[in-house]
Amino acid sequence: MEVSDEHPAADATVASSTNSLREVYTILDKKQKRFIIAMASLGAFFSPLSGNIYYPALNSMATSVQVSGTLAPLFIAGFADSAGRRPAYLICFIIYTAANIGLALQNNYAALLILRCVQSSGSSATGALANAVIADVSTSAERGSYIGYTFAGAFIGQSLGPVLGGVLSAFLGWRSIFWLLTIFAAVFLTLYVILVPETCRSIVGNGSIPPPALNRSVFQVYQQSKVTNSRESDVLGPHTSKQPIRFPNPLATLKICLEKEAGILLLYAGIISAGLATITTGLPSQFHDIYHFNDLQIGLSCIPMGVGSCLSAITVGRLADWNYKQHATRLGVSVDKRRQQDLSDFPIEVARLEIALPLVGLASATLIAYGWVLQTAQQLAAPLILLFFVGFAGSGAFSIVSTLVVDVCPESAGQATAANNLVRCFLGAGASAVVGPMLKRLGRGGTYTIVGGLWVAFVPLMLGIMKWGKAWREEKRKRGELRMKGKRAEKSSQIEMGMSKPNGVHKIDGEGTE
Image (cartoon, rainbow, N blue to C red):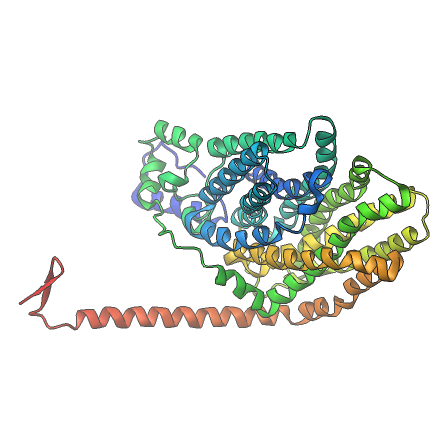
């Protein structure tokens, strides 16, 4: 909304206009939101791309980088909530770009391993940052679709990585992999610095509060230089946020894992992701043994699962938003995508999990079938078709559960996603480590029957979330209110103690005088 310059208005009218700006969840229009989320999704593309692109050339490094990729988001998420999304993105991509240059130039395996860990620490937080940006600019009514786009970027990176890495390694050498990543990152960073505005709500609110200088894009600086004397600049300028930057506290992210509702959701999202990891980890050896594929052919075999995942990320997100509207209609609640709805009396858990649980059933059935198709060495078309459906259903279920994590932790979306990343990586690393021995001991059919069965075995936890989740959110809200009251009371008592000092005692330049 703009403040008109054609007719002078009274202060009350200006204040009313300013309040109107701040009533909506975000003042960004649809095109601006889509651009910002597209950039966030592109940023999330780098982590899975980097994690998979070098597999055809250096498969033995796969497990060594798990720790850096898991722990880095714990710090970056807290930093992004305090300092803003832009500084966090800049730090991540500067580290990532520098590491890629080092990887392309080095000749030592130990240096390669260390730099790959540094590269992972730079890129691994981009998924958490993307979901935090989505929580900044989108309401619950539209969040399913937007988070779906973010997962689509990640799934494309995961699927494209092995293919691109195999082609580059075969024709241009392994160094070309890291030079290409350097170019991609440099282009993204340039576009981000120039065009993408700050979205962190603790700094810019709904976008109506101008950010500090360090959080402004080049385009914003240029715009401000042209409208310095405009009425809107006069109204909003003095309220520029000066949020103090706090040292990131990783324990705040770990606390989310211990919350009743969020902890269960994180566990189930991690189990789904770990099951998908057993497929991507086991596929190279199984397709090599059964179909005698080389690295490039193995990379191409990942495409059906990637296509299914990308299609799921787009369609399932829209389905989640549609189901949200259906529940709102039944409750007599009008859905306004420009304003965040109070979810305290809204069954958000039911609205999300009604979509996720049927997908879990489909994913489990097709995964078990995939295992037995490999066990009996059927024609190649059969496992590839099943991989498409496993990717579609499994990735869709994971994205919906992850969206629900953000819904129940709206005040700390970045940290919630970092916690999701933490659980997902640890369970994924464990699954990747045990799937090889399981395949040898139990066979392909037995292994994937167990994995698919685990997905179904934990469904009762989700049914419990659907039944008691709203009550648990209310308990959490009341605890938060009590903590805030305690902090305010403590602050008030400190102020009263300061005012009750003897009148004859004053402090001048740090020294007491009478």
